[in-house]
Length: 106
Image 1 (cartoon, rainbow, N blue to C red):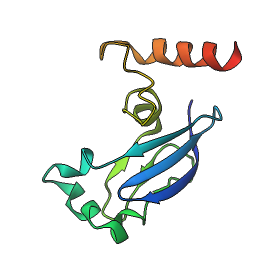
Image 2 (image 1 turned 90 degrees about the horizontal axis):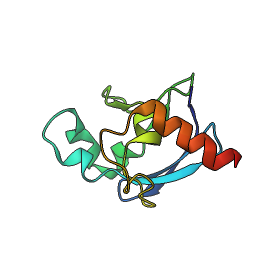
Image 3 (image 1 turned 90 degrees about the vertical axis):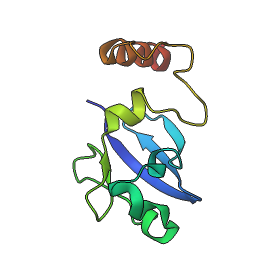
Image 4 (image 1 turned 180 degrees about the horizontal axis):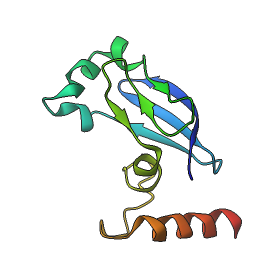
């Protein structure tokens, strides 16, 4: 089970997340927080940088309850490297995990 072990606020709605498989990814959350919902608070940079990791590493969260799970962040979300660009959205989680493990341990 993937976990988030470190988080760094990079400014301008960007976070660098390090996962338990030693991979670090940089995410720009501008697209996610553009929706009119609980994410409205996150538009403020001061509020956005209040992000924390759940104690068990199974996600990140903000004081208003908005959160993201590590599986989505590691295996589906588009990061700056765009690791999953060549795969269809229907590429299943277990397949993504296996592919990642093969890359890491190859």
